[in-house]
Length: 435
Image (cartoon, rainbow, N blue to C red; front, side, top):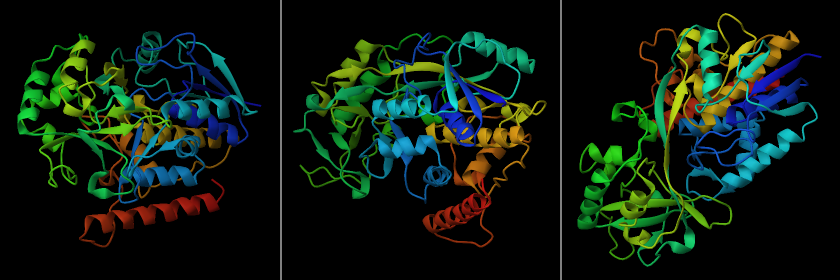
């Protein structure tokens, strides 16, 4: 029986290995951990979340919410494990990061069709193979992929992770529980600042000393994961219209909307650790402690992890890959995950899913699955393979890349829900056909 190699056990590789195995194929899942780790990785488990523990919005009126539901219906391992290790986060799906990774690892290691090999791959092997080594691909493998495609450089951008603090060190006399617009249960700890406190914080943030990151420039930062100090440089109110926006929140001490709010989100099931939402950073660790402790509720905060900054690399996919994330020249060599230009945890899983179901069809001599642009899964694959894109950049899933409705609906939420329902009807039909 043909064995399909999957290189890399992040979100995309884990999902790909599972989908191949579930379709009866033998899978060799090759992961360099624990033999070697990137600077951003700490755990030996698969599907380690190196940035936020949030999978973002969970409503169908939100494009990533639609993508989650499509994947869930299609038997996604990542969605199954995310839902099983969910922690409260208002209208978002957030997970206990250690519990999530442990569950993914256990399921993959115990699958009878999956063999796990601990090894750093340094050459692009012959197909069938799915390469999902991620945005933190090792230098040797990165060079190998460049040589494989006949190019010496990837595109790249910089990504950042937010700090974590212990729950017991948060001053709840200066904070309160509430979800924005009171959606769901009050799952966020809200840390308010008045105008004077905010401006003093901003001044120190702008002038704080940054860690050295080779080649870093503000214009190389991916907009969806912008370091908080970079946002602060863009204007005095940039943070108040971004991660520190007070809209939809009410300070119980005043009964009014606060001037600025830092939100903390639960990071583990034990509710003992919280992350600073939107506070990705590459400040030096002592500077993070000094500046972030200016937030009144975090005056005595205990930081269990500081924010880090790392370089992410990705392919010029529209020139190289097809809608199934496969090499246009060799359909048995496919790629998946953020290295293809999809951005986000759920999007990475979706790319691994589609690359795998397509690879399974090729190996088993079946027709390729038809995920049209009316679905979020299909729209992502069509985006990364769109040869008309001149300045290709990583993309989160959004409704603008999904086919519009034929009829006009004025209200945005109603329109998005109609798009979502149309998409899920397509997914259900594909499943009925034996996807």
